[in-house]
Amino acid sequence: MIAVSGVGVNIEREMEGLLYLTSSDFIAIAQMNSTARLRWNYVMGNENNRYEQMAIRIGLGLAGAVWRFGRAVHLDDSYSEADHARLNCPLMLAEHLKSASAYPIMVNSLIKGVLYIGKRSSSPYMQDDLLIVAQKLPRIVTFIEENIVDMAK
Image 1: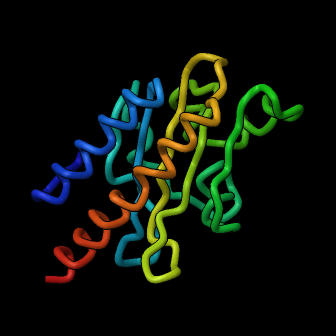
Image 2: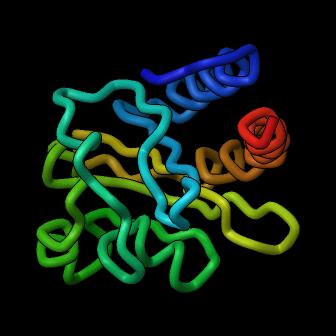
């Protein structure tokens, strides 16, 4: 986990809470960097460090779909093309995830990041889990905004 300031500690705390409340195995947050690329800055529950080399590309995988469409994207076995979709998602492959959900982190109506949660089991996220993430997301956005301000100083 990469965390540089008190803001990072707050983000970590929120991530730990989401891991627990949604019964997830993996959670990550990507933030836009100075070169306008999304990179994974905060990660918990990872099995390896391959995420460090990943840059999110528009339209590639769940995170890329979120960046492209600006809305949450979910993948589990209920989707008929789930196996094919997993093969096109670098993070799901690297972390052996079977179910995942990704959400845009919007700051001033612009996507500044992506929140990604995943399970290594085939159990899908229930509507209650997705509601929990939606309720916690504004708080995470606030910490991301603070982090953007801190980085500008």
